[in-house]
Length: 394
Ligand SMILES: Nc1nc2c(c(=O)[nH]1)N[C@H]1C(S)=C(S)[C@@H](COP(=O)(O)OP(=O)(O)OC[C@H]3O[C@@H](n4cnc5c(N)ncnc54)[C@H](O)[C@@H]3O)O[C@H]1N2
Ligand code: MOO
Image 1 (cartoon, protein in one colour):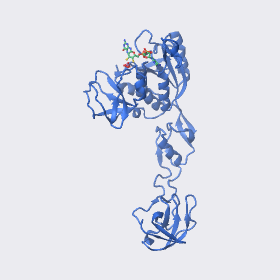
Image 2 (cartoon, helix red, strand yellow):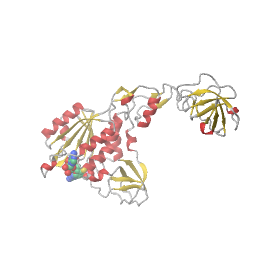
Image 3 (cartoon, helix red, strand yellow):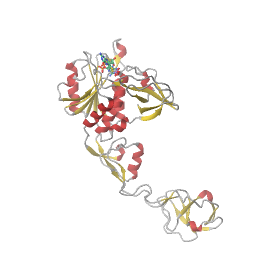
Image 4 (cartoon, helix red, strand yellow):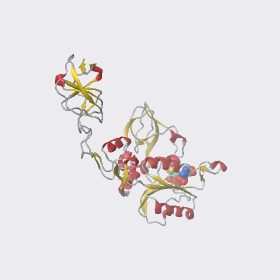
């Protein structure tokens, strides 16, 4: 059996990176950069005011000294001339600093009388001037290749004055669920032997947050003659295929046999984790195929542990970074761990992470509130309330 770290490393080094394309920045949010982003302009473009007030020479600024207001500078509408000694310009946030001025005094300190102004304070130390290129300079690399365009990064991208950007193509995924007992949500009530196929809905939503596009969701009964064509259709169309269920060792577990017609290069099957031990991964005709255990909690945990990094890596991102465990405060206690690494479902609160009472791998309800996974190493000692534990958002 593989350890989680070894299985993840195998998956990441065999993940094919998809080709690049150019896209309008409107559609770039959440996607991965195929090339670094270089600023086309300075920001700010010139020295600009950070406040509404008056621009002047600091040497002229003394309490009670009247200066002549020589005009107005607003954002986008600069003063057409420089400032002479003894002059001030009315200025607004974002306006270019007039030539000759070296500070801005906030209007709260100003007393205005006709075209004269004097100040009661505000003479420093802040000059309230944002310097030309103080944020970034033309030619600076603002975003690296492989970086994901977060909402925050989108500001810098647009601020760099770029209309288009080089991105890695989004992976199209096909999800295949298996099982005679499963029926589309909304129909399971028709028979006591049916239950809703829930796993694919969670996995599809997770894949979506990872930048993938759901091409198709297919379901097949536990019959190789039904499942093999679904597998074929998946690897013929998709960049990545996810199979849910049929991963274990039972007579009806056909997730791997269904790819029998393809050239299957299996990288791992069975990982020493709980939940999710039967998770498996391989390349079928070169297409990544991830097999998730059918139990809904197991499917979601393994999707988070393997599908999220896989999709990041396929988009040229840092797959390992998606599962970087962070120190978190435990709110509650956890027992000693056994011979498989355990990923405990927990809920974040202001006091720390509270483990869910129900840690069953077949559970569905605890998933609604469990927004973190706590990692428990093999053989770990029991931990008490307040301990620092490694965890990732779930
Ligand atoms: N003899 C052994 N039996 C089992 C082992 C083992 O090592 N030896 N492993 C257990 C573990 S761990 C898991 S996890 C399960 C997972 O097995 P499968 O991937 O084959 O899952 P299924 O048997 O297809 O289904 C398990 C369970 O989950 C329900 N299910 C399946 N798919 C979905 C779906 N898309 N949506 C909602 N629910 C789903 C299914 O109805 C079953 O109840 O195997 C253990 N057995
Ligand atoms: O993945 Mo199974 O997770 O332990 O029920």
